[in-house]
Each structure stands twice: as structure tokens, then as C-alpha cells.
Image (cartoon, rainbow, N blue to C red):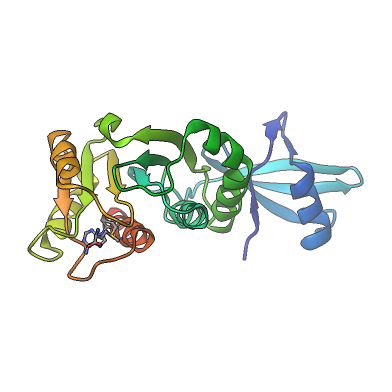
Amino acid sequence: MRQRYFPLSIESNKILVSPSDEHHILHVMRKKVGDELFFSYEGHSYVGRIDSVSPLLISLMYEEKEVNELPVDVTLYICSLKKDKNEFILQKASELGVKKVVFVNSARVVNHMDENDLSRYCARFNKIIKEACEQSQRADLMEIGGVISLKDMPSNEELKLVPYEMEEGGTASLIKELESIKDYKSVGVIVGPEGGFTPEEITLLKEKGYKSVSLGNRILRSETAAIYILSAINLYAEKE
Ligand code: SAM
């Protein structure tokens, strides 16, 4: 597998990596002078070559044309779950090409999060995102867009979907929306907490332009629902 790194900077054809990436390059991957490495920086993908190992000096060789980002900007609004589940979602959303994750506090959220909590978790969350984006060869790091209350949900995405287990008609509603996904530049998806959304919250989301879709006849855990709908978006957005 091609190991990919997100460097600290690329300036004057020199690639500067963090101390932990330097350790990984030299002592885990055991790279030597002349070896090529792959980098993602500000949405672009580059190949570099090691000129020296002590100190570690890496030159930029060329930019790769292929960029592994989804053709549509996906924002995942996830009702806050337990800490380990939030971390799991960040990892899977990174792998599934999400541009931004926003944590949401809704009526039935058990583990309410605020900006202070988010600051405390930030280093750990960013590490999970960086490793997942490197692993899945992304050109961009997924962003964390903060924590909001459900009543303050923005409605700026062109297509807005809310998976809702009470929606009838099986997966037809989801398929119908995803068949035209290539017409949109941005998609917002909000997934409910373990206790689900209240009927009032669904009404509010619909007023904001969210379309309610079913993910099939079984009730899924929130993290499964997030992975399901993000996978479906990948399937349709990248269909040739
Ligand atoms: N409160 C519900 C219950 O106990 O019957 C279940 C909520 S479910 C565990 C958590 C979230 O996953 C829901 O708010 C919804 O967004 C999503 N979800 C789970 N299963 C779904 C399905 N079959 N169709 C659509 N959304 C689903």
C-alpha cells in the first residue's frame, strides 16, 4: 500500500513533515535516500523523494493528476453519541470522503457535547482523521465543523437528507434522491442519536429543506446508519 502523509508545508519544492511523520517514515516504513513518498497538501496530491535521512530532507518531484475526493461536498451532521462511537464515525466518515463533520445536540442526545468538550477532544479527533485520510489516500483532510444545536441546523447544502426509520416505502426514497446526486455540488446528511429524532425535530428539518429517506426495514444503530448512507452516496456519486 502507498503510504500517504499530510505534510506541515510545501515551500520552494521542499516538503516539511511533522516529527511523528518523520519517525514513521524513517523508523516504521524504513525509507531510505532516493525512496519516493506520497503527500496530500491543500487538496492536491504530490510525489516527493528523500534526499537525506539525517536530517530528513524531502524534495517535491511532481503533482499527481488523480485526486481521490468525492465529486460532491458531503457534510455529515451527526447527533452526538458516546465518545468511542463519535471517534468511530470520524474514522469511517474520513474513509468515505466526507468533507466536514458537524456534531449536533438534539432532544434525545444522551452525551451532549459543547465547544469545551470539542476542544478537549480536538487533538485525538484530528489524529484519527489524519490517519484515516492518509490510509484512504485522500487529498484533503476531513474538517470538524464544530458542535451545534439541532434547532440551529443550517440549510445551505443543495441536497439535504435525513434518514428516518418511520419513512415508508423502503429504500425507494433514498434511491430516488441519490439518482440525481451528480446535479448537486453539496449534500448535507443528518443522522439521529440512539433514541432517534422526535416528530417535532423531523418537522423542523423538513421545514429547512431536509428530505426524509428510509435506509430499509431494519432499525440501524446511528453509526451503522451513517456508514450506510455515506456508502450509498459514494456509490452514486462515483458511478461512471
Ligand atoms: N429511535 C429509534 C427506535 O428506537 O426505534 C431508532 C433510532 S436509530 C437507532 C438512530 C438513527 O439512525 C435514526 O435517528 C436515523 O437517523 C437512523 N436510522 C436507523 N435506522 C434507520 C432506517 N431503517 N431508516 C432510516 N434511518 C434510520
